[in-house]
Amino acid sequence: MARRLPPLNAVRAFEASARNASFTSAAQELCVSQGAVSRHVACLEEWLNVKLFRRVHRGIELTAQGSTYFRQVKSALDQIEAGARQLKQSPDERRLRLKLPPTFAMRWLVPRLARFHAEEPKIDVQITTSHEPADFDREDVDISIYSWSEPPVGPNYRRLFGEVLLPVCAPGLLENGPPLALPTDLARHVLLCSLNRPLDWPSWLAATPGLDVNGNSGLKFENAALAYQAAIDELGVMIAQYAFVEDDLRTGRLVAPLGINVRTPRAYYLAAHPERQTEERVLAFENWILQETAVSESRFP
Image 1 (tube, helix red, strand yellow):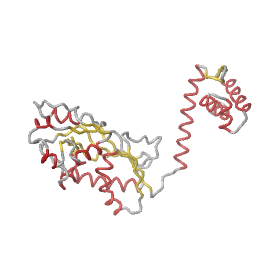
Image 2 (spheres, one colour):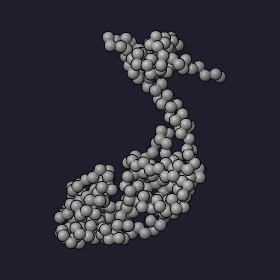
Image 3 (cartoon, one colour):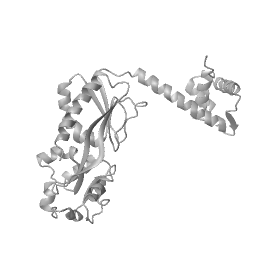
Image 4 (cartoon, one colour):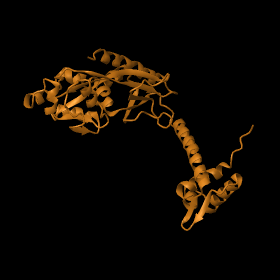
């Protein structure tokens, strides 16, 4: 059966008029006359047998039915636009687009990225950072990495590593400040954490009964990477994820004086674009990072 679609030029004129709240602005956007836009809208109203606009002193405004129809039409046109944009920007076989949490990118991936480039010199990696996972329907992203408390479901997800929390600080903080030999000594130190991870200190403290320490006190930073740097600069004690301080602990830039590690239910997962997960550049990065994270997690305390 053939589709019974309204006149599509009329739909486009209606959407532009509703979005701009003006026939004149819609005409300028569509490069037609105001009279043409007005006729298109009248044609659509006749086809639908519904009044979409009412004229007011300063122009036009949507009726209740027009407002409902506008939301539906706008959503459909947004999807058409996104689909066209994805086709026009078809994936470059050499370009790999990653979307990662800022701290994961700065403290785990970037220090290892030279190894991937050595293995795959023809793949150009582009990294954007965000605290939100990628929306593959709307974003031109090949791979997203994010931390979930529950394993995500789907063939395009791969677990990378779990989270182990431990307090860390700079050696100089212990040399110049109060002692930090027992968990109770934390009460005499400034606690550092990320605003995006407000539960890390409370989770670690809850696993150490009998402590009278406020896990929500101290200095809070926009992201954990800033808090790690603050710890290195001797501002206080950071509640760290082991994977992100492993190199600092090995080189001595940071120390873990209390030796109490707490695993959380969360883990980092890789999500590949469902329509690109079998492409060569995506598989190459996935295979490489799974090897890297397996080595990293094998060293977790």
